[in-house]
Image (cartoon, rainbow, N blue to C red):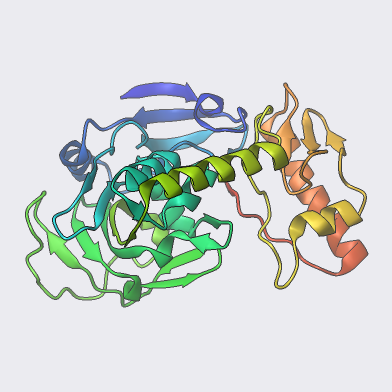
Length: 313
């Protein structure tokens, strides 16, 4: 447990206020124990690499669960599926699958986040999305109860995952096998009240060398097209139907526009970069400016992919 932790150290934008408390669990069992002792009214947010997150300058009053570096188990199961915990980075998952001579995980190398965050937003790139590969997930609620769920428990769409109000999962005891009990509707119908802690994923058998070559090609494409030399949070806006947010932003002449230390990237218009001294307010103001300009000039409403939390300074 740490107190008064600057969130700029735990977000890829390198901006944001202070978290009152931050807890990094030792492992899954430790996380369950911690949650069972947490006051019911304590605000709680789970963070991985912070690559899709903006924390306002006023910070967070509650507790941040730092899962990257904690929930890191990654293994090949006897049935050929991969079990991966929420704190594992996408690039690590992609490489692990290739070393097992499995295909279909290569695109994870292009997503700068952890599995937990990817599951929460149905992250994807290059035409693939994570939930296409998920056979089941494990979640934990505020009471420290584990559940096993499938995709049928969720509403899943482009950059959207929501637990159905009547979604039922199998309750688990610690790390033991699920008991198979049918539970009443979850008392935590909102997705932020239940955290993803692991997933079981299916991939096809194939040529591992070819998979690694594709990973290299995807990484080279990412380096060539994205402003990775400056702090950013990846794509800021969802692509509207049958169009691209970057095209609309560029069409509106917004490439290079600055507010304080925040700038619409000159390399990729759907990226907002921290040029060195951006505050979270600078970044949020830029997001709002881009949305307003695109709406005024094109009539298209852009919706952020990034999650904005915390209090204004």
